Image 1: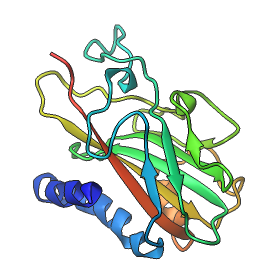
Image 2: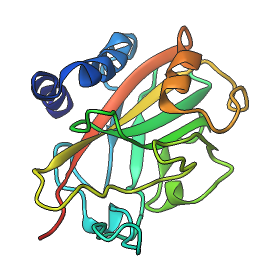
Image 3: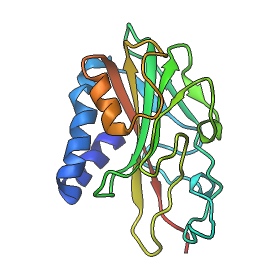
Length: 196
């Protein structure tokens, strides 16, 4: 499985911060039935993400090259008893566990988001707080000249009501709130490198 291979390779390369993220991913993966999966029409698992998904170039972000369009995501065959979903995306190479999307409170009936849906507030999810304070999608912006970065999109089923959690939770705070409430985990990994 491409997701598992990337996580294991990057564990060796990225030290304890990534090890912690990997444990969050794997600790509950066994709860999900075989078949719970995440797909995207924007990129394939382990494939390159298009430039439009990267963060928008601005005076204070001169190295960014995109349009900040969140990728399309879909998931299927969740674990029984799911009442809501949570979605987190983070940079696997970033030693500070850079998180570009924290969204939760997604009703169980919602199993897909179109391109750009996570880029703006919606009644389909509760916005958390990414590493830069964003409540919605904040696209990638790796420094020029760096090797390709791998971005993990983690989808977790929970037994919590969609309105249970307050807005503005960080990824770490969300992890703490979901302890004991997870009902399966699935993931997909996208790759991005800044065009030269």
